[in-house]
Length: 183
Image (spheres, rainbow, N blue to C red):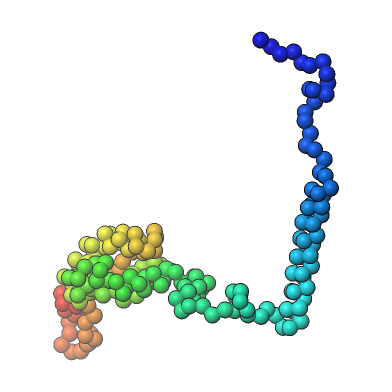
C-alpha cells in the first residue's frame, strides 16, 4: 500500500526546532558573559605577572620547578640527541649478560664510534679475537635488537696489544714481530 501525500502543506513541511524562549536566551547570554569575564581575567593576570617580573612559582607546576634527577638526565639526553650513545654505554655495562661470561672474561668493549656505528672490542688473545669475529653477525643482531635497528652496523675486533716493537741490529728487515702472540 502506498500512502498519498496529504493535501495540507503544513503537514508535509519538516518540523522546525522551537525558537529559544526567554530562559534559554538568558542561559546563552550568561555562558557568553562568563567566557568573556574569564578571558578578561586571564589577560589581567598575565599583565600583573609581567609587571612583577615574570611567572611566579606557586601551587601549579611551571617550567622552573625542580625535576627529579632521573627525569632531568633523561631530558638532557633527549635534548642533546645522546640516546644512542647512552644506550650503547648501557650495553657496555651489561656486556657479560649480552655475550656470556666466558666471552666477557676475554673480550672487552673499548669504544663506540657513533658516526660509523662501529663497536670496537679488544680481546686478550688472538684465539679469542678469532672466536669473536666468528660471532660478530649474531652479536650485531642481538645488539640491534636491544638498542634499535641500525644502532650497531659492525663490530671491529682487535687482538691484544703487544709490547712496543723494537728495531735494532738483531731484527730481520721487514719483520713485524711475533704475530702469533700479539695479533
